[in-house]
Amino acid sequence: MQKSKVKKLELAENPVTLFLGIPGPGLIGTMSMTYIIHTLKMDLVGEIESSPSPIIFVDNGQMVGPVRIYKKDKMFAIVSDIPIDYDNSVGFTESVIDFSKKNHVDLIVFLSGIQVQEKNVSNLKTYGLVTHEKLEKLLYDNGIPKFLSGVISGPDAIILSQLRNSSIPTVAFHTECNYFFPDPDAAMQTIKIISQIIKTKIDLVEFEKQVDYLRLQNRQLMEDTLNVLQTQKESSTIPPQIYK
Amino acid sequence: MSDFGSFIEKQMNSFFEDTVFNDFTHKELVPLSHLNEKHSSWILEIDLPLVDKKNIEIILSTDHLSINAKLTKTFCISKGNVVTEFNCLRKMIKIPNGIDTKQISAIFKNGVLKITMPKLVQGRKIPIK
Picture: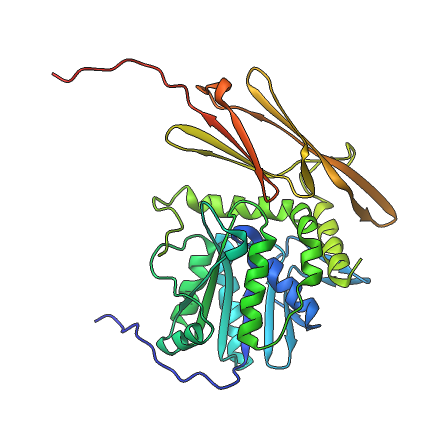
């Protein structure tokens, strides 16, 4: 007999929350999380290790890995500056789940983008997808429409599948974006949603000043990310979009 | 530059160190682009941030499109003590076969140049017996 997928839980009033931002469509996850980490002055508390790391950053003489963990109060953030490819996505998610269990995380929030043909920059939408029924209240309370139907593919799908099968409640936010180019406008929309969720005002003035530069600076990361996403697209017969 | 700005720059400079981009010495950047085939046309999109419409030049040759765009501000990347300045974005793209080159059109919106290349309509009608 198959296991029932219907899960119910009571989410804590002020849950320990882990935000996950990795390179994906429009680089939404990485750009939004990077800005929030710096705006909220979150502390670097660890790294997700993959062996061997394909890149190391040097900051003030300190070596830091590409997938890092930050913390402030009851909020954790994991941000990656390299695409998580197929070979690494299972190990990556296992590490995220392991970290979440050890740190008593009540809720994981996964940030990504969804392709739209003609997007309205002044009215971008974010859609929510939840693993537990009770989390729908979180969407309702924050005026976030549900991701009703469609397909999620690529490493995002592997990560979300594993999170769904774990015992940790997860909500995924997909913001309308340009799939192929860094999309700071969509990242800003995602930041607004996070701001609502954590009930903390996040000033976007600094981000708005950097919009054009972010698009120029992130060209290589976008190209690397598309190479990862394209690998899967070739073996998929269903386009990764569609929603109502 | 703000904390966020310098953080981003620092990160991306490290990233660029060993990347495939070899445009540093030419002082021009290669923009991202995406070519998509539709039923009756090909759509080419090119990401041109920090660019004004009046500073974009599209040149059509026999089988290539050349896009040159001057940046409104100089974009700098610093590596150690070396600062490299970039003033334009440039890309040459081979156009697909079977394009009606006289009907090629372009629009520029939100920093993205969209070039529509209609396919040639040719052939003859085949009657059904």
